[in-house]
Length: 410
Image (cartoon, rainbow, N blue to C red; front, side, top):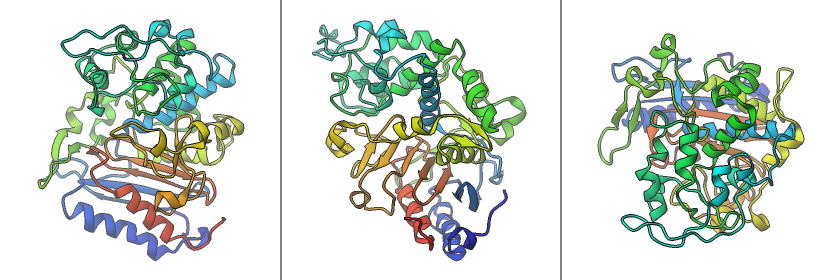
């Protein structure tokens, strides 16, 4: 990877070098992570690139073109895809979801029951709109939230693990039989909302989600290594994935050579199904930094992206006031939520170096990215450890990056 002179981009090269030393000392050498890869850029030009560790349990060293399961970093891609259709007036943010997915026409709020007791008839409130899906204020949930009878029903239906089990229509039909956790628009809960959004993209476009991505996002951006399925000629590039075990070495969850990603997916999960490289996601992040354009190709209009990266929580609230999630990929204090992204609305409350308006997201296997439109900085971080809440590595990386910045645009 070509790396620009950090000094010319306003960074201290020696302080940027601390990133690799820190990752090696605190994560690789201590056995917390098997591998890492990071790209830090300013104005779209990488000023720091590093990779450490092994990508396979057999000792295969990390390589620049390694493939990673990016999990929920799929969500911003799906959100961009949906907003492309909004720009074409094929759908509107305040349309009821049932306009495209009629299975949702009778969904209502939970009113009791669950488990061995059938769900009680639901309370009918206002319908779920597409904006509710994009902001995670839909009343949907994830089975892994593990707090309620609704979460339990998701686990029983294996909605968090749909890749090989069911197709898009079966997914929506199953989901539509389970009550909502709350009336849409009243609370925030990290959920399968973006999976539903992905199915809407399929029905509106008449294309499988991966085909839509390839034609309208990945192809135009030159993201040639990102998709829902890993072709056989790239199988040797797919990293192993691990699970955290307290006080022990991470547990090998899935070998790259035996991954489900090598088999064609029945369900293209718009909320978490993509596999790709750090270099590809760097191109996606740079497009976002450039207000929807990269190398002369426009993916989304600047005003559309402004709308997506504005805080849509009622009354300008942050997630401490709105969230009922036990887990999400966002910090809560000082953090708002837009149409597919979390964003910093009060840097002081985050207790991290940040710019107001910075937006970001991460994935369950501890991958992460952020875009700072004030300082014109982007970062893409890849590794493969589940769950992403295990270590404060995202905060640590942001601290290291901003401490190396000498020339602020703010």
